[in-house]
Image 1 (tube, rainbow, N blue to C red):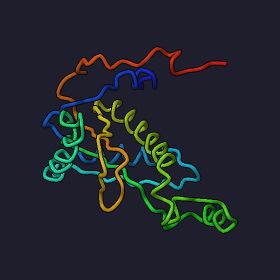
Image 2: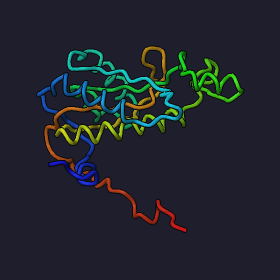
Image 3: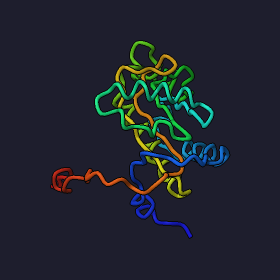
Length: 193
């Protein structure tokens, strides 16, 4: 029985520790491929890259953790060592679609295709990364996988690109850790007029 979207997303919480049981690689690849097919992107340009560190990247994840724990408040983020760690970076788009290239030729600004501008377009890139992460989150939750989100980076690059976001996934070792980190009152955020 398919769950309603609201039921799926209500299950989400920040996972701090994952089980040693590794999700099947085929499942993870399927979820990421499905996310890629479903995610929206302005003109389908996808101005980011997703680097997936799987279960065999133990040393690399440890190096990332060593970097993150230098950031104030970052030392509790052991979730970086999850079975799968997705690192989202900027990406210079070198092969835009015919449609996008036509727009560029007509004078439209496409910062993600310009080597001098693409790294400065972080607000647009981050918005699109968020959409990817949310779809992947829903698909993970449907498959009883937990997720974590990570922003504790400071001047960190991966493969010569700036890291904007990191997301981990795997089987949670326990339920939500109560920290009192609840959302503010809706009226503080939503302004109906």
